[in-house]
Length: 322
Length: 141
Image (cartoon, rainbow over all chains, first blue to last red; front, side):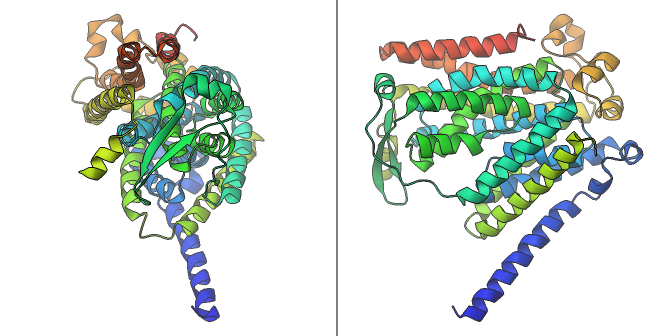
């Protein structure tokens, strides 16, 4: 490819990314006015539901193409641009993450990618802390949660920028005593290399501590925590990336269920908001999976990072009452 | 065929039990979720709180909305049988079902772990069920 063609392609990719962001935001014409109570009151509920469904659908596509869970994008972005209170968005966000993990769980387990022995101990500590996180998050004033959410989103965007979507090369260190005692190791069949890949883990105690922390954050903000689970499994504990991604979903399904009950009992789960969000994200994820091989995922990832930064700034501003 | 056999290599019996239950439970859950929502928004059953009223107050916090509208939360739906025949309650129950899905899966793993004489994981699965049941009971709220 000549330098001129390469530059042209880069310009084209950049323009496509910008147009993508614009299109996404234009899908919700009321976005700019969402903070205006008069505008919100004038809009019929079913229009908001259709917008939420359409927005969640686009988020579902983008989340798969960008290699992140829908749950992590849902809370920051919807809280920035829809008139619902943050409590209901966090409740819906947890259910979005939970539903995605439940629907993908069974096939991934059958393929040996999601591993129950690896996931269960992490889920046990994570679910306890996610309940604590949910209780803390719902007890805090909304502006403090917005502020903390803004900081968390900026952190996630930074993590995404640095990770570039690739996993580590696994260092084959010896298993630690705890993982040996728990019998955590496995074999999965890699469909790309057509080989059985065996794996084992190390630094299990440190992993448990971090999963406790991640569970708390996930419960507090109602976000899926795949963005944190996967690096801990992969980079810290030496789990192969595919197994890390799949097992992260298993952990999410348990942690999300535990925290969801706290939101349910606090009255923060409204089916009117939660169901279109779940439906939109799940349908979008299926389309996203089909588009995966046809779309330049790097530019999509860049769009998602830009969206997160905008949502994070908006959340910070809301937190400061601006 | 060979690939299929290879894929199932190394996957323990308990994991297969969990995935089978998860598949069935989640399929039923999603059907209930969609069905329940249409019953709700099309108002095929009477509602405990009209949709317009919910929409007019969704800018309030969950606590404020509960105080203002006395929205049912937790298992309070089961207080009377009349409540169960409301469209919004029906839709809420489908969400409750999804939130209990992992409890069903874990319940089936315990006998499988006991059969495998894996008492460490029997204990972990047991405590996980206890954590989820405590959360679902509403005691901690």
